[in-house]
Length: 172
Length: 254
Image (cartoon, rainbow over all chains, first blue to last red; front, side, top):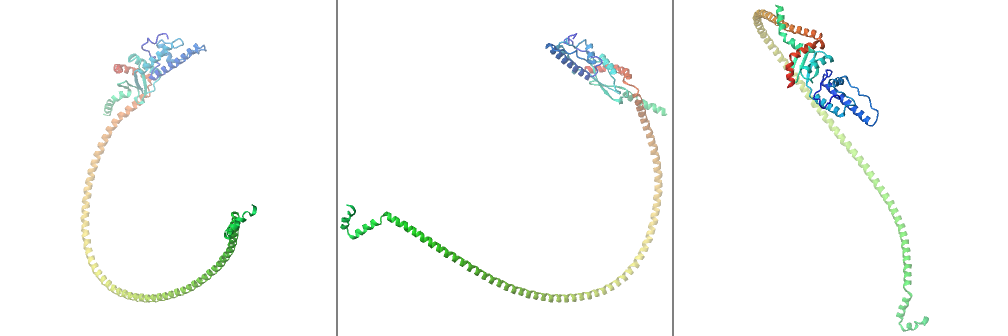
């Protein structure tokens, strides 16, 4: 690892990690890589042929790049254990914002949204995505204690009386 | 000494003593035992012979007794059978006589009963004939009475008919009045119904206007909802979230 994990207090989450499930998968993948590297170290000690460097996903690669970390045979097992432990602690304390959309959310849009959330709200914010076509458009956002209905349905609901007045005026 | 050693002693003893001694010498223990054995054998032989003879006599006696007993039993049975046959004949004759007497008595009783029944039937027929005559007389009287009553009833009925005609006239008049009242009520109800329909129409128009607003709103929502994907909505969403940013941040800090 280029930087000591023990001295690093907080990690930066890349935009490709959107949900809490993504963080869980990230931890699982790092554990898997750690096992592979540990196995390779044992093989090297007994003089057996060592395997190649473990393959990592784009999500893990982004995470390592964002945090200037590397996972290879050169990193010590202790550092990897500390990394896994800290990631687990971070996963358990992630602030989750529930966002319900009227249409299916694509990964690119989610990445933009989570980027804005991490910039404006909390650096470790993750999204729990929902789908509700009745919203028409916009988002139904739920934080731990509040609900923000930013959907088109809510906006039109407020304009109901206005529409009735318009119709009565049209009727004469 | 030798054989004659005792000679002097014999000569010295009395003859009876000598005889006693001689007997004692002659009938010593061996000789006595031999005599007892011989007697025992002889006694057994005599007993066996007597037993055989006694057995023969006993067998002959038993055979004779059996023959006589069988003959005695046969005679007794023959006598009993003869007695039973004779008793049966007497009993049959007695029963036959009894039955004949009973039949004679029954026949007599039946004849008496038939005679009594015929007499009773004759009396009943006579009584019926008398009753028939009495009923005929009663019927004639009753018909005459009925004729008189019917004449009175016809007169009463005619009076009732006249009363009914009067009642019908009154009822017709009442019905005419009721029809008039019903026509008035019908006119009132028609007016009320027209008013109610008019009010209902006004309410329906109002409700239609209200629902029309919702229909138009629903149509607008459906039409707009299909037009935008998330990418197109993203600037608007971020803009709205920017507007609520402080509230979101405050809630996340709690």
